[in-house]
Image (tube, rainbow, N blue to C red; front, side):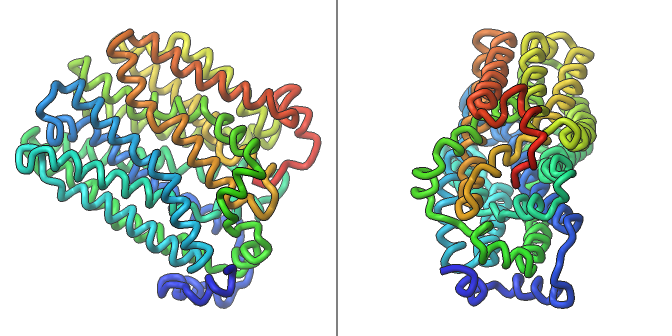
Length: 454
């Protein structure tokens, strides 16, 4: 049930990708990086298209029977469904992986992700079909989550395993570039339609186009990933069990401590992730008279800053160590949480400062948050352990963040959002402190030893 079975069940797309590699039996880290960036950008594009629509579209189209605040909270509740369904998707698609190969798994998962996202574009509103619109949207969101669980392809691990030892911090940040790049594309599309259409046309049909685009992007991402999955280097690592799925129950039983540490280590960055992308958009729309297009432009500028900050995190991590970057950035996020959220209530200048400063910190922390403990997994369980850890950390740190933040801010004020963000920073510091390999201080001592494989 390993490589030979996987090869015999490869898809036509995977076989086409294999032909591309027929003359070259080695693949450079740069080529892997491009495939990883394309894949992650497509995932985050889907993610942000839904997130932005949760604020600008669904309260009016799917939840018009309640006030705008309640409708947005309901939308954020459905938003969280994907994070709940994602572990189920991982379990299903790891079975597909073991029995039919990664090519089959990725093809099904990415078509399901793109198809369920595109299906939302055909969603009738509450005015047409009543409460069924809510159930259909929830079903599509669950399908997105299941699909996301299947898009784990091990390519970030392949990238790390092929990266030069002295540049592992740089290569660790490459997959994270997909988040701001996906936000830039999604926010730009919504800003374009909002600025060129009337409110009636936008809510009637304009909002649907970004969801159509998602399917095309996922097809491009699928072939980019399959080209790498079909390489001899990937197959060698699969056959050696370094990129082969292990039973989930066994992985949790044997590596549960590493999974928990890995889930809590990035909470500072994951909490901040939503508090500078999704939540502030909802707050501005519901509580200020500012135009949505202007704020989307601020988000696009912030995402560009985030790209630069992620790049900087890679350079810094190669000097002082990845764990030092995680620890120091968590401290800075904790300090930021003490005053920054209140800036959202201080006018347009305060909003801009909140966003730009937040994206700078997000880039530094998020750039090194992926797979911080993956090197602690045994070779045969690294692939599955990394997937479980990623699912759990996103569920705990990000899945309910927009819902919790908006509910807290609406009931207790913006200061409570700072307290929520502070809790994420504390969780990161505690996780760093528990793991003795990361201590004294935040991995600076451990940096003298070879960096673990991610």
